[in-house]
Image 1 (cartoon, rainbow, N blue to C red):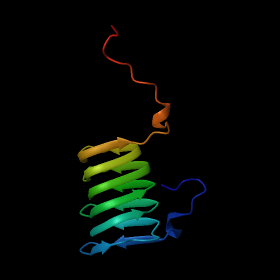
Image 2 (image 1 turned 120 degrees about the vertical axis):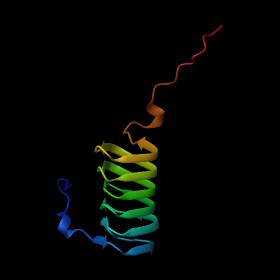
Image 3 (image 1 turned 180 degrees about the vertical axis):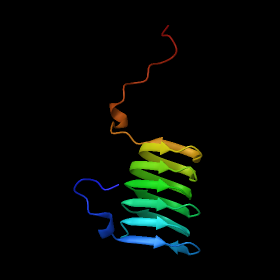
Amino acid sequence: MVRPGSRDPSERRTLVVGRGISVQGVVQDAERLVVEGTVEATMIHATELAIAPGGVFKGEIEVEDAEIAGTIDGTLTARGSMIIRGSGKVLGTARCRRLQVEDGGQITGRIEMITDQPQSDLPPRQNAEPAI
């Protein structure tokens, strides 16, 4: 998921929470978060989130791109793309601009699509009742 003009993923500040490891609290300044164990956090801002099969993220996170092969329970905002792999589960609220769900991927909760069109630019709703 390297975007033109962005740094090589190997140069990003990466936090890997390995299998069998549980982390709670605040994560700061991580550009890429890889969850193979369990992470519970209040609010994380990162460029990329990857939850491996068996990995669990609980809390709130805002990223550019997310790839979910494990479980996220909470609120996820992906300003770019969100890919839910066949083993992935999203519980809670997810917001994204682009969504891809592989066969077997699960979503339980609410999905909101991010659009470039502000709410105020939407055409006015027509009243369903005829005027008398």
